[in-house]
Length: 66
Length: 139
Image (cartoon, rainbow over all chains, first blue to last red):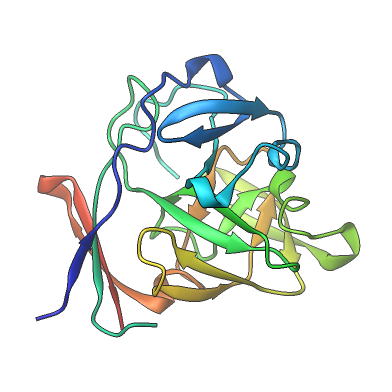
């Protein structure tokens, strides 16, 4: 039987609404930095800390149709 | 890639007040080997892996590395930039799930999309919508 791993959760503990239209850097689910482009987060980003980059959509979406 | 390894991912409410969706962290290495973990949406309707255009610089692409092309989406059409060179990528929570990503960049894209080319062609994907879970399996 194949090994089943589980992904980490949650992706974010913080409310990301204040960062709409921006990229945020999440560390342990908390926002530790934000900027208009992810390039500007490079100085803060630490892959060894499990940092994650998320673009926060400008608008809250209800029903999403791509 | 480790054949047979599966990753079970619960849908996440990444943004407050929105429905839980199939978000997934993918790590992408730039040309120098620096790694960036980017959260995107698993999107079976997208032909390609697409990223917001402002992430091209982060991944080490310059204008000369990108070719402009037209594309169609559910609401019409637009322009995207296709990278001339791929990047090594893997599912962050299961690093043996490696794939070669040929990212395509779109202006005003709201978030990264992990689509059929590159990403989904490398794995088996099962959606368990009633349980708000999806499972990726290395082939």
